[in-house]
Length: 89
Length: 267
Image (tube, rainbow over the protein chains, first blue to last red):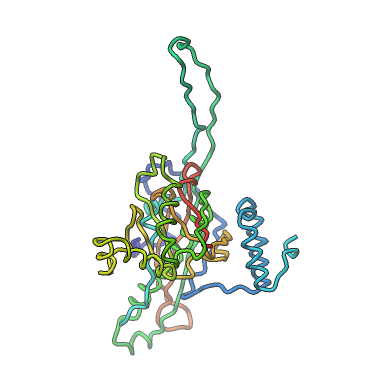
């Protein structure tokens, strides 16, 4: 990956979009709801019982099929943190 | 000035990466036709089947950003170009953030599944079994003949390297000379640091990938990074400059390719 040195983020927003150089059709689409990824150096999340439960609930909501597939392993990990499977009801 | 220890980045090697400014990709797919075989004696006619197309697209959903402030005195009292050095480090941190985001997405979206024998990658005897099972998951597709990849964490390597060293004269010789982790049985093996696959919410998506790894066919997924900028600015009340590095990122494992990637569970 290269860094586009000297490019201004803000100038680009008002400029004419660049010509499509991709084989795919390009649409000039606004994305107003960007999430952010924490890149604090050395960041690795260590979960508590509560934070892992919150993560599991969110994961179940976002990805129910995969949740079911991974359920037994995820519940085992949750129980290792002191939780009970019934907390997920 | 010394560099911070950096982790290897793999996105560019395993995905189609577009940094041309594209922020949306439209890539629909049609239903799969199945042709019938008919004996010539009764041939000459066919039935017309209904077919459909399904929308599939990539949008930019997340941003990776990091910022620091270098005071004027810090820059002036240093024998090194602090601004440039910090900027490089920050740019790498952002790239690492993108890499982690992409790998976890790829692992999460893969529909192929495989559970290793007990002991996972660290058990020498498992390695050949794992590789052959993984290759069988994507064999038989035309795309299965292109390059494949497996992204491991560094803690997985003991079994892998021990197995390579025990695998015949020429092969073992290459491994012993510290060269062979890179490719085996046609699979390009990439190694990232432990903690890359995580049970975590990164940006807009939640992942449960701890003790999972990803295997697949290269180029099955697309990544777009429409903006990758650094910005340095004077801040009121502070000498020196504030530096911010940011990038927007979108990921898509295309619907037709999900079976070309395998979510590997370590037993």
